[in-house]
Length: 377
Image (cartoon, rainbow, N blue to C red; front, top):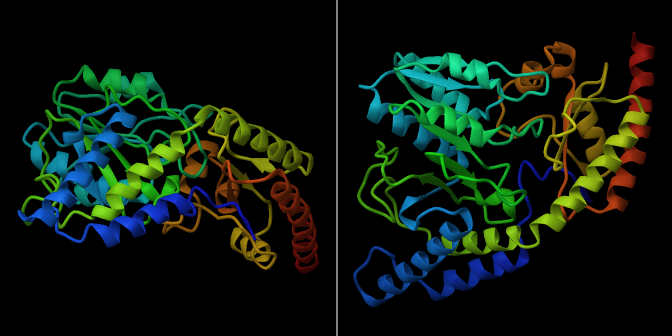
C-alpha cells in the first residue's frame, strides 16, 4: 500500500496509540469527580495541557479541548460572533477555507452577518492591502487558515494579525490544522486557533481551540464545566494525554523532517512536470501538499484507478461537499482545472521508493485513461 493522503488524516503513531491504551486502562475516573480517581485523572490532564501549551507558546488556560478541528472552527466562529454581535456583524475570510469554516459562515450570513472575501494574489496569498481596505469599524472577525488544505498555500499570518490588531473590536482566528507538526507557527498575535490531533499522527476524535484568555466566547456545547467553561462534556483523559505525546513527537527534529519532505516534493513535482501535468500548488507552498489537474479525466476515475493499485490520494479535502475544487478555482480562475484537480499529500514517513512507484503507475494510468477518452470523443 502507498498512502499519499496525509493531509486528510495521518496514521496514528504507535507510541501515541500505546499511550492512549495505557492511560485508558490506568485512569478510569471522571476528571471532574472529587474523589481520588477523579483527581488523578485531572492531574494527568493538567500535565498534558501544560505540555501542549509549552509547545504552542500559549497558556494552559487558553486551551479548549474539542472533538476535532471542525468543532473548534465552529466554536471559534459562532462563539465570537454570537458573543460580540453588538459590536458589529462584519466578517472577513478567503475563498480557500475548509468547509468547517465556510458552512458556519453561511449559517451566520442567514442570521444577518455580512461576509467579505479578501482578494488573493497570483500565488493564492492574501492581498494585505485589500485586507486593510476591507477592515471596518464593525468588523468583528477575520478567519483565515494558516495553510490551505487543498493547495498548501501559506498565508502571512503574522502580517494579517498585525492588521487586525489595529481594530480593537475585531478578532483574528486561524485554522492551523495543516501547520501543526509540519512547521513552526507563531500564535503571539493570534486571538483564536484551531487544530486536530489526527493531522499529526494522533488519535481521531480530539482537537482543540486556542482562545486567548482576555476573550470571552459563547459556548457551542452547554452543560457545565469540563476542562473549561467554554466546552461542556466529560474530559477525554486518554485522548488529551495522547495528543500531548503526538504533538511532542511530531515537533521533534522538525527541521530535518521539513527538509526531507521538501526534497520529496521537488522530486515529485519535477517528474510530473516532465509528464506535462498542470501543477496548481505554488512553488512556495508547504511541501506536504501538491495539487495537480489532469485534463479530460475525471478526478474520481483517476483516484479509483490508483486505488486498484493500492495507491491512495484524494480529489480535494475529505470534508468538501462540492464537486469542483473551489480553492483551485479561487486561485487559477480556471473551471477546467478546478473540475479536474487531485491532491497528493506526503509526509516524512513517505519514501522515495513509494514516490517512484506512484509516478510509474500514474503515468501508466494516465495513458490508459487518455486513450479511452480519445476513443470515445
